[in-house]
Image (tube, rainbow, N blue to C red; front, side, top):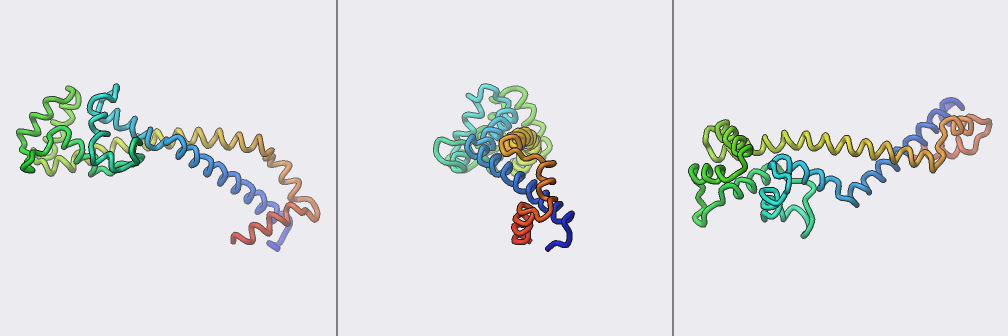
Length: 205
């Protein structure tokens, strides 16, 4: 016994809400995996980052790069891209490494000139911040990517919050999860429901 009917009722009510929240979280994760929300959200972030609304230019080249393709199953988009992998793949697209394994600053600048105007400005700013050092530029590309992904994570969080709210409402309605009715059932004298939930709560603590 936890000590009193009031305390047992409170614990029972918390237990019911905990079970509902776990069901909502599990359903949300199932939907996220089924519809690949993380991968699609990341794709939208990359599209904005590379300023390619049609996704037929730089975005297509980026997702077609071997470093990116190895991050997911064939024919699917990755749900996570390490910042270092992003920097290396993008740099190789803008200025491919020669067979000799060399990439000069002039080669990089020539590749930047072929990018859309707004992206050229971004690369020039990052290159200037890197002191016109290619290795330091990789670090700046990582920082740029990470700062954008923080915003993308915000998009995903807001989306899942809406989905979780909808799932919670659906479960409450379908399961007839009425707090007042549950409290009345739990607080009744010799309540079998309270005893049952109390026993389940005991097994988890």
